[in-house]
Length: 190
Image 1 (cartoon, rainbow, N blue to C red):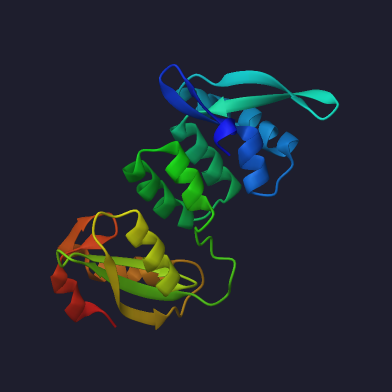
Image 2: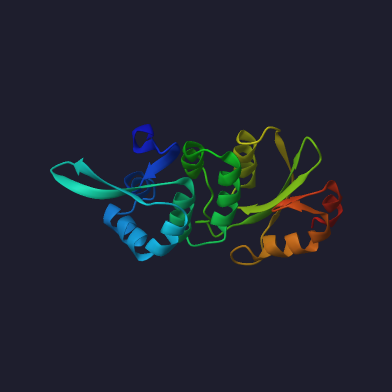
């Protein structure tokens, strides 16, 4: 994996080849996406194009910066779940960390979803939705300076992320940032 992550112009870059392999997509499909949304990718920085030898032929691939990778992931997995990944990835600040997180990220391929709340050692509460809240909290703890503890879990009633959005709205006055809330939300969890 590290050979496909390079440091160009003092900025980590990720190969579209790595992304296509990570998502089990044809590389040509990923390259077409970059072409189709070229204007948006360009707004996030210069698009580095390189030629690579693959087996018996030369292929064109792109080396994307971290914001361009996030845009591509948003397009590949066009769902609200990617918003959560974006927030965490931006906090992580490392392209390698982002790519490693993709291996454990819950993209919602299961029909069964749970709204959950996890508390950090400072008493702050993260409210989210996942197929497997226990595993999600465990993975979130790996990228945090404090451990998280699952304090609430209930089956989601609606498709997609509606339950999570409704709970966020209900707890809005206690919002710290994004999906994080003050401890007072514990009384509102149901």
